[in-house]
Length: 259
Image (cartoon, rainbow, N blue to C red; front, side, top):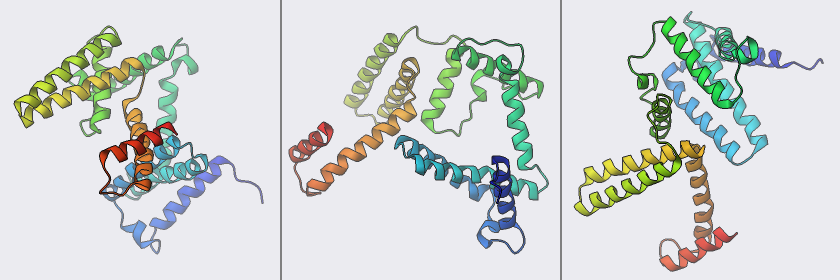
């Protein structure tokens, strides 16, 4: 049997999805809607991230397949309603990649990653203007339903692109100390609302610091979470919880850290 090429494998996935949704197909798949599938898109995205963080390459193979199923599922539902097909989505991304990489596919030039990013954003803004979709404000193009940490990254990137920015990371660190002081003052005052406000400011400054250090705060926090899970797992394995003293748990934590 001749080995399928990548295109044929993708077509087979699309055909399987269509069969599952067809009359006489899978009862579960047939009853799904755009809204009911949305949570699976998020879940599969985070499972891909988990596999990458763990450098679980066999697992990543499977998780990427699960993730690819989601757009095929959405496109199949859209095709049933006569809206568009998966082919239309593929055309859209191919055309976008060609259009936004003029330094590769046309006469444009870009010497650095920063040049590429700047030109990408310029072309994106031009496209929106042509469609009459240009946002009323610079930050209007950033969706409000993003996770808060990602939203903070996006809006600070936009503001910085307009020149509203610190000059260097040292200035951001100074601002970080200032916000820590304000949080301490709010804590002393005992105002829950003020503490929430100041903690939000502190997190916002940390996101900006990540931008200057070229560290993605979302990924940094995910890795910190994974590190805490590992170390606390060691504590949990050797301590009686609850019941162990803080000193006992701290000794086990340091033991896990030294490993």
